[in-house]
Amino acid sequence: MDALGLIFPAIIVVVICLVFIAAEKQSARNYDERQLAFKGSGYKYAVFTMAVALGAGSLLYDDTAPLPLSAGDYMYCTLALGACVFTVYAIWHEAYFNLHEKHPLTYGITATVVGAACMFAGFNPTNPTSIGLAAFLLTTGITQLVRLALNRRDSAADVEDDA
Image (tube, rainbow, N blue to C red; front, side, top):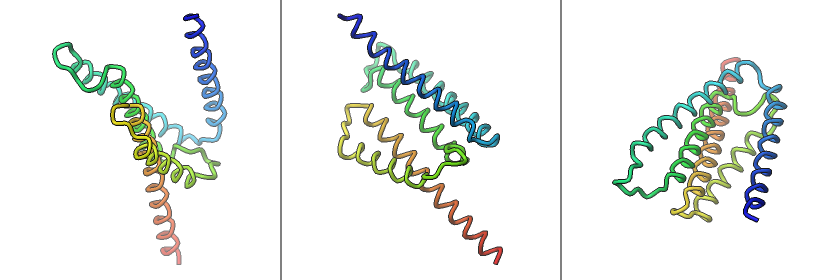
């Protein structure tokens, strides 16, 4: 019974990973070379950030000083931090969405609202999963909305300059 309890979630994780890999290969065709280069740099910065955070965590987590987070929770927070670094970098360099994305404003508003709801309505300060998810969604949504506002301001200034 215990083996089935481990096999079923493992199969689900493998299927989800395969779906994400297929979706990433499909969407990679809609990015230009500049966007792919920025996404690669964003992944690099995210990995470096996670490596530094995990290195700092390995120095902090010894048996002498109790910390408020378990080692697993600290690793989850490190993953959420890496995801936030990649997302902010990719959105700021306009490489998060592909060339034919139609609803980045809707995505920004939805991520911000869901992140705020996760932060305030379902917030559990003892659960780093809710903190990490809320931080990621709020970071993604707010960064997307700021980027869109700056793009509109720049395009309005370009129109005024042309007139």
